[in-house]
Image (tube, rainbow, N blue to C red; front, side, top):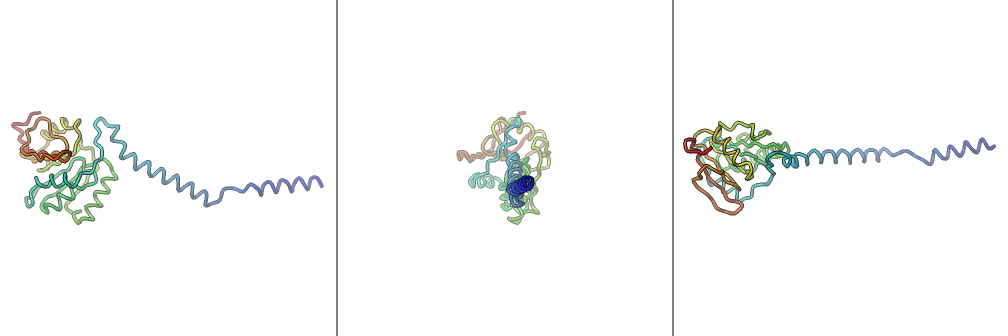
Length: 208
């Protein structure tokens, strides 16, 4: 009789400790997947802070876009490059401004590149635009007639040297937020944080 009671007690003990439900396991897996996904996406935005020169993602304002477009032709053909193109708004706006202009963007953050391509498609300029996931320092800019820069002060000296070394003679350069340190600008729109400097690259007079 004691043996029978002992077996019943063990059986009851096993029944009272059910395992985790399938729903619970699915919830934990889903939570972990979302957390991993967010970590991967966030890493693309945080990573620039660990590079020698940090180029953070700061979207261009409406005023900055209009200031940039004021220096671009409306009908002349050519190729434009936006260095550090972010979410692609400058590239898309330039394409809409001038249908004869091929507009490209170079950006290291893959999620911003994907977003930019989607924005170009949504605005009907996907065939006129291209977005490259590249390191701007390794990207060749020799084929561009127009270059737009949204940089930080620490990078302007090195970037100026790259422009002089690679860009064709008379390339038109539009710098936002910070000017080139040595090349003389032709025009300027003074508008606080939306200030834009316009240059026409003359290699014979450029100071490297």
